[in-house]
Amino acid sequence: MNCQTCNGPTKKFGKDRDGNQRYRCLACKATCTEPHEPKPRTLGAMILAEEKALSVIQHLVEGCSVRTTERITGVHRDTIIKLLEVAGAKCERMMSERIQGLKVKDVQADELWGFVGMKEKTKTKKGNTAEGIGDAWTFVAFERNTKLVLAWHLGRRTVEDTVKFTEKLAHATTGNFQISTDGFKPYKGNNIVDSPRPGHGTAGWRGARTLASQSRFLAVFFVR
Ligand SMILES: [Zn+2]
Image (tube, rainbow, N blue to C red; front, side, top):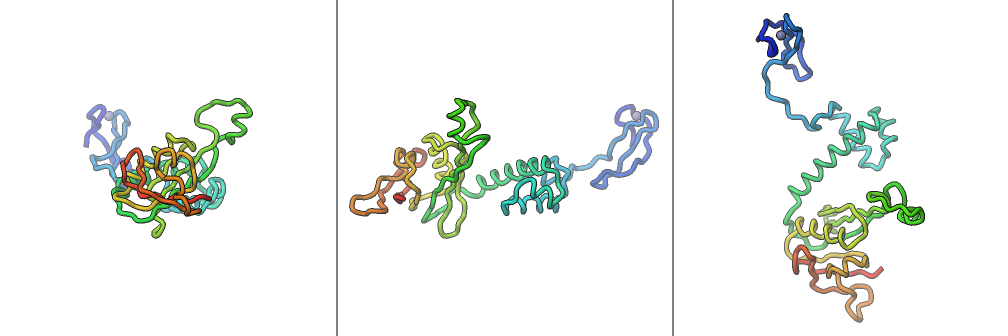
């Protein structure tokens, strides 16, 4: 093998971490690796061992904080965050590829509250109008019998984000099904759920439609 820079003679120069032979030029000292197919890597550019990465993700899934996970696994918190991003993007892709057009009977939709930086109340009090901070809601729809998560959306508790969420749910499912939600206003405003049927106290229903899927949902509205 000749040098790729100056075409001069080379000498063997150890192996890389995948076991490919490396060479160093005797004239210009440049190093290169023998021609090889790049090895497929689960974690992309990350060097972290897969076993270690799995342990980190298991701790995070169990609800451990980033710093707790750092102390237990010995992986630096910046690496943990990076891994979280890589794994999250892969999960998202897998979900949109595999979970689509499913036939479901009974779907429950919930919103989980959280905040970024500060709560909405504090933000208003401080007169802060910055985007990307304040209350954040995670919309989740899951099949009630199997607990399979069909769709989720992170956003604000607005009509706009609710519509985006229902579009994702429409992508994940097919046909008519029953959907149970709380009495969140944008659902009603978009005909995603209807107001209670007169005389039925806690629950009413009718065929409802989302803006995305037109007449596909049979909705149940639980008054809490
Ligand atoms: Zn050379």
